[in-house]
Amino acid sequence: MQFYNPRIILQLCIICLISSEIKSQTLHSKRHLHKITKQFVQNDLLKHASISFQIYDLKKKKSIASFDEHRSLVPASIQKILTCAMVLKIAGNDFQFKTPVYLVGKKSDSIAFDGNIVLYGSSDPSFASALMPGARSIESIADSIYNYLKGIGIEKIRGDVVVDESFIKDIPENPEWLYYDLANYYGAGCFGFNFMENRARIVLKPSVQDSGICSIDNVRPEILRDYYESKLMGLKDVGETEVFVIGSSNSCMQEIRGNWKCCISDSLIIYAALNKPSAVFVSLLKQELQKRGIQFERNQLQTERDTNTIGSILSPSLDKLCSRALGKSVNLYCESFLHQIGYQLNQTSDRKTAILSLENALKKLFYWEDADGFVLEDGSGLSPKNMLSAWQMNQFLLWLEFNSGLKSFWTLLPDAVQDSKLKNGIRLNKKFNFGLRLKSGSMERIRSFAGYITENGKPRYCVSILINHYSCSGDEMNTLLGSFFNQLLN
Image (cartoon, rainbow, N blue to C red; front, side, top):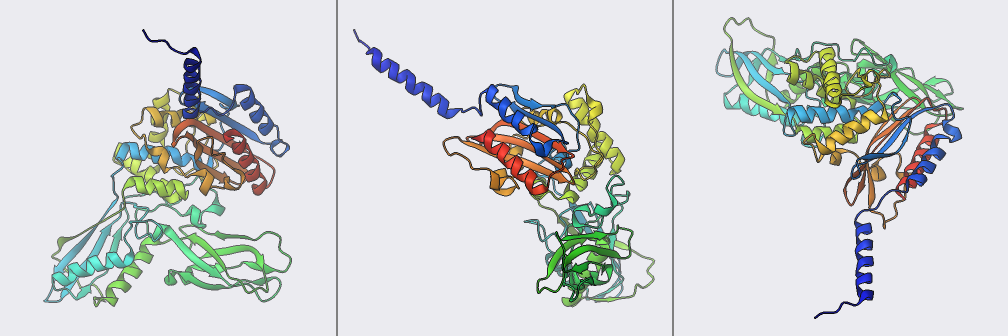
């Protein structure tokens, strides 16, 4: 017969309890969570703001903290979560945008071709992007076309490079976007053919006298130099630098306006929307082919036309594109995804049809009783007319984690402790294995975050917070939100 020491049994029970606690921490008691939330929403900086907030415990399957969670507010860029997740669900992680390239015409002699090099755009947002890992450069694309031409003995094109961008027939900019956003890099329109993320780099020189104009030093690509005019004013007594670009895809000239310091030695780099991406691409591709020995002449009349496939330019996989869209908050990517959702569901890329299809799919998915408070006007969140609540956002995050088949989607969200505006306010205690995977959103007087609080490297809580109409500065709001999340995690 064996005898068990009661003291040893008690010690083993205590060890088991401690071990269980180490494996699964909880944020706070319900009372303390209520206290933290109350202190946050009653902060004087948010006196005039509207707030919608909820934390949902994935393990216990219940809300553990909230404030006006059904209040519909402008979400800004956290809306990208919806678009990215749904395009992955519909098209698949491995989907790639394809841009076919053809030689259309007839070879007229041993080295000359009468006809055009034709590319058919599919609205690939990463086409020739230097910022998207895995995207092919303009030089690489030129190499492939040149090697094909060389292989069949062509040294001269009596024709041109032609881009078919009819995949999207809508105007590039969403009509619900604010006009002063359109010519800035983040407001670049989505075309049937995009190039270099539809973004131009402009370097400005300071004015040499008070109230003088800051001149343009250089523009990249160089051929865009005549597309931009600086009316940026240099001032001795300037508070905060304010620089923006005015124009649209229909503008022949875009204006750089605002205020900057004068009489200094620095230069200022800004990024503007590229309003004629296909024309810029055609010009640059011809330059690259000419460097490689291909001549271009005026098109000759040719009644006989053959079509030969040169190949297809493929984008990186869709999950990688979504990672960039979420990590760097690139509006162009999500607008392209929206058109692709419409094409996949309805065989048309029409913007309104795509938005309606996406909105209805989400409403049906969750049987939302307050669906009137859920409004989509674009795919990126740039429109101030978009509406959703923290509760609705968390419902989507719940679906992603449990029912979507996209279990790893949360890994595409930025690590907020490292990458976002919150990082200076958060100091994680290492004895708690919590982390933050959040998408942020910001517009004028609008700030939002949505994603997951992780535990031991896996999602444990859904968290969504939307704040509209705050009256403090952006830096004050960042500090306040950083402190709030710091309290939650510690």
